[in-house]
Image (cartoon, rainbow, N blue to C red):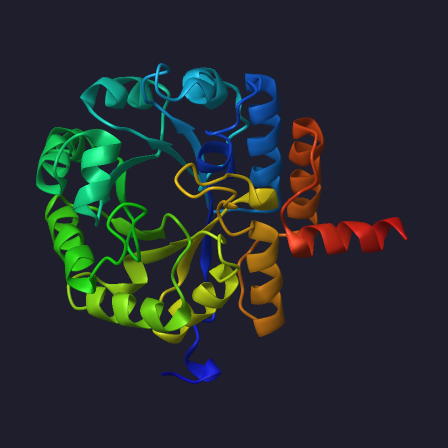
Length: 306
């Protein structure tokens, strides 16, 4: 356990709202709204925004406008605009859309891999070999996400060794960064310590990212716990967008506003303007016709109104 003095002085926040946050929305959201959201997030100062997903529209209809979104956003030099890619069929349009970073994904749970993509973990990672090589050939960053790193809706507990096995395979594909995702939001700080410390033996801890969901209200505590062991990259979603389709009534990603409020309180730099993010969160929540799921965002917004 480290003291707060050992915390990172600066963290990188990857904003995943436009992709991970919106992909499960039932009502179709127009490309213009998605473009406006990405542009607001760019203005807020995010160094990395997950903006698109080139998957089959049959499986994820909400992401069918990804090429249009990537073409319409006002890009800021130095900002990484990422796209999720399931295979070579998805890589080609992502390349054409000028994605700066390709995101591939695997699961630490064998049961989840079979149910989700109908193949084993080993087979799923083998499928990404061509994508990884193509990304490298074109000079693109390659990032990987490991779902169910702390627990699975089908098999329950997932061992740190299972996560380490997947991280080793993804490392060998040449990934620049690997996201350790708590897909169903079951992690608690002690488990986070154990898993992150185990993974640091196989992959540089400054290139591991924490991707926490807030199903059980532990996401902000898990971000804090990750920093205690040296993690300095986190994924979050503006307004807490995104539900988890595998856990009934589950909230989605940890809200960006809540994470930024934590960092502000700890004196940790992010380079991101919290007020601009609050505005972006209110903008998209109004469009979706519901209140933002971000506690800090709603509190700051309410304070402004009074």
